[in-house]
Image (cartoon, rainbow, N blue to C red):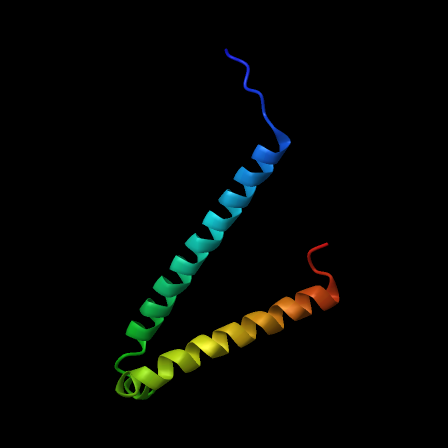
Length: 83
């Protein structure tokens, strides 16, 4: 087996690449879950309201998701859940 010389900076760089790839996969999963959720509610009164005003409702849903994520992240930091 050949010896592979591992540079510390190279390993850190590749770890960052892998972490970013996982983050992007998470974004794709979120979009798929959001699409399935919207399709499930399509025939309800809430779904009809969302689909009738799609150009307004999608940015609002996206902003609410971002705000909730920020609040959860802040609570995570305050309570030290991931130390």
